Image 1 (cartoon, one colour):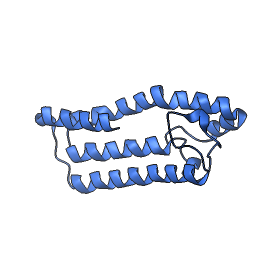
Image 2: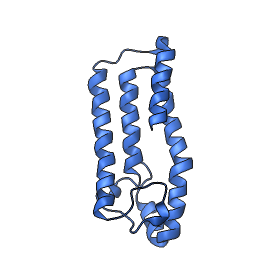
Image 3: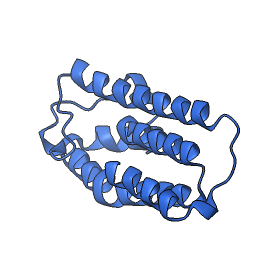
Image 4: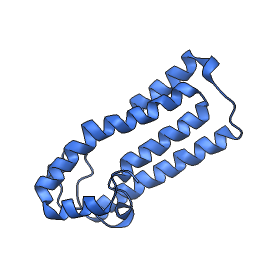
Amino acid sequence: MLVAAAMMWLAAWAAPGLGFSVPHRTSIGVGFVLAGLAVSLLGVAAFKRAKTTVNPMSPSSSSSLVIAGIYRWTRNPMYFGFGLVLLGKAAFLSNVLAYVFLPGFVLYMNQFQIKPEERALESRFGREFVDYSRRVRRWI
């Protein structure tokens, strides 16, 4: 997320001619950032309540499959929240190139973070995870 945010800023700085006017861009940007932080924190809180790891680099060490709270609507609230933060940054920057990094973030996260996590969770929780992933979408 931090790399994408930095690239968005750099792109907007390098190509100011691709900027456009967005009324209330600061309010819109702050709103998306706050919503993203709230969604991410709800995900972290659900993991803490379940006393399982929040570390995305070790999904195989998960002690329980969290399917309550925000996890009833999205399997990846932390990543979804990061996406909302980036959307807020793009709205604030109001530059076409800033928005280009949003689908890139989603594609990268799906391929290099979420899919490996899902394989580990399916290996660890089996049918329970498969059933859950059929009921709840990956993002929203």
